[in-house]
Image 1 (cartoon, rainbow, N blue to C red):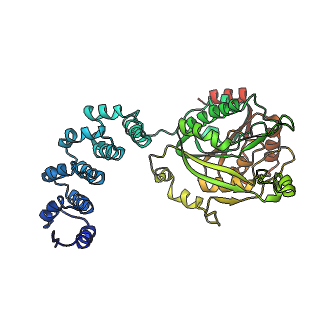
Image 2 (spheres, rainbow, N blue to C red):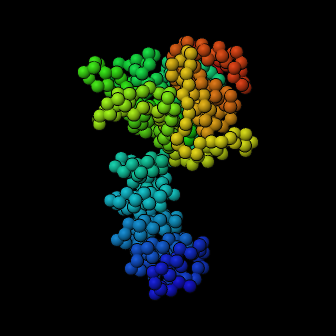
Image 3 (tube, helix red, strand yellow):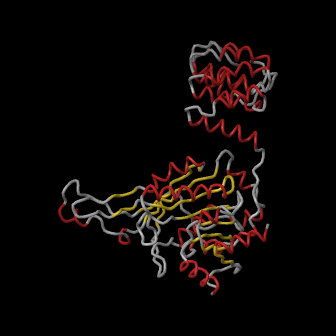
Length: 438
């Protein structure tokens, strides 16, 4: 029993305690009266409960909520009207797509989603494509995309498994169809930090990475992850009279990635033992003068992005059999926070390699067995090795012949566990290989 003259706490308690309601709910009249209650919270809960009845006869009462002075009450009114799923509501809700409150517009879009293919509704949705609010733009983009593409097509990737291509990454990626990679993990050459990565300018370096990651986006499957390991780097000072320049690569490349469609998911901090990094605070240790402090850089960023997140991750999981999911479960101890303590690695051939432990964590946490894992800057193949050792497949590109030589020689020597199938190509050979497969 709901007594409309009860005190605030009693009414709130009753309204919050109402569960599923059917059309024969006997206290409907009391709920209708509460739409006019002086308390905004009670009005909102009254509308929310009446909406459960999905009764078109209640439309006139929901319309009253659309004139409420509080945004939350108006949004509940729009939501209640949307749940009626009757074409009569279209004309009533269209004006709210012009509201000054972004939350009202978003709620109206949700209410009209069922009717997005109606010419009138679609026309108004299209007008919102360039709305200044990022959430509205994103939702409109998803509505239009879902109309044009009812299914996401994944191209077959069987002929790309366990391949190393010695050649330019951009040219190689342009040979590939869309939606073939299940996981991408890479650490690009740091701007002028190593002898093998000399670029004419920092902007030129970022432009190059943008081109690589655009092609990576196209070739990565919908809903799957792109994980990027970078850190700020220092370019040496011109002379002792001038200061050095520190480039924040993870932050400068981020907006390029988001703009091309990657959705930011997580920032993982890879922390290294302080003894393993260069000493930047030796001078301060001696003079202790304020302004002269420079901390030792013991961290790198492992930034996690996803290709579109309009679908829940369950959508990707359902593409695997129950048996494969069971085999791929992460049964060992795993990182519970975004701070990963991992020692760096050294290599006799390559001056900046991934630690194998880092690659293995990424492999197990972000892919399933038999997936195809890609590294655009493959180096000596540490990520590829992790893929094979954990029953995944690899594809990587690498410009330096000596690094591909090292990887393939060790692969052929049987230092990897699992499938020994391996194909090595130069760019033109790979192009011919693909032409034969088509």
